[in-house]
Image (cartoon, rainbow, N blue to C red; front, side):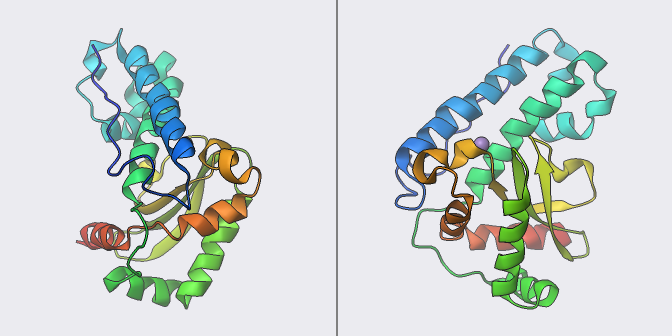
Length: 205
Ligand code: MN
């Protein structure tokens, strides 16, 4: 049984050019993300009772799963969830500027958009090895930048994710080699701020 599927991208493989190249997007989605989907299905195949869970439920309730699949579920369900979230944060250029209550909250909590950008970049550069850099909110609207290693998510905390940047080397190495800073600058040219603002409004409900 293959419960989980490789969710199609919300745009074509070449749509993020020139900031993220077609080859990188294709391999990232159709090889890396697909491998997490396949491995999650393989991991869950002998455990039909776990197959009714959604991705989020698997991650949030991982400590209730049989102990021998907790680590592979964290790695692979996290891998699938984080990648889906990553693509959903992006849109083909040119993008609209940040807006709405999210933009106001960024200015309030980070003093200025430029300062937010610097803080986010610093955190993303600091991730050692493979991981993710997130903009999250508390349920009362206070923004926080955090990072998680491997495929860990903020879902087990009280924080609600608004944006995520994949800082695994496979996300950028083909185009910019080890220049993670250039990749981060390019990512800022692809953010779907309209959707990020909607996510923020939902989170603070
Ligand atoms: Mn990735």
